Amino acid sequence: MKITVFGGTGRIGAELVRLLREGGHEALSASMSTGVDVMCAEHVARALEGADVVVDVTAPRARDADALRFHVRSMRQVCLAALEAGVRHVVILSAVGADRLVLSDFFLAKLCQESVLRTSKLPFTIVRTAPLYETLYRIVDEETGEDCVISVPPFEMRPAAAADVAQVVFEAVTSDALNGVIEVG
Image (cartoon, rainbow, N blue to C red; front, side, top):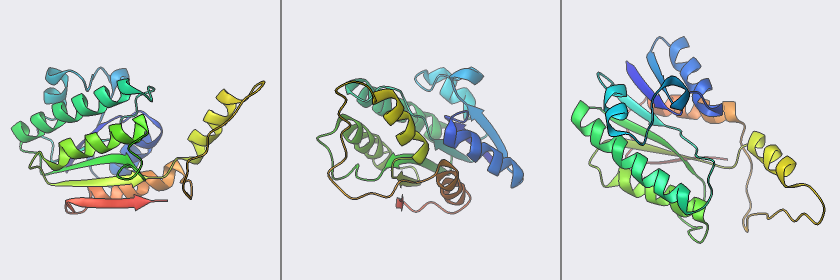
């Protein structure tokens, strides 16, 4: 099976690409560092040529309105190109709480990304993950300092390890589309 992984050089994407290749699949890692800009329709269309499945595990650095623009526009690009290419399954990485915490720019962006996919008429699976252990450590390191306050989400959560999330995404990719959600963490 040929699988295109947008965000394929990131923390989860690189592990997913490794798992897919070890599983005998042809996995294309599509990211800025491999010359593929998910915001460019031409790049996305080229990356999806011959693909059976497309995965979006992109993660922009922005956590504000820029994240919303990124997730909506890139998901539109991916869906349009996937329809044109005859892709059989789209898998995206979202966030646990995306459907409940819409006052957060990040969660609203993920919910809007999900909405674009759900209305695309493409078979899909959404994998929602809790924050990654690896990301939590980075956030704490960046935010620590004098008079530092670190916000904690107003709900219980259990962080997930990037390798565990990549394994769940791998299982989603190699299974039939759920047209629904899997939650990790």
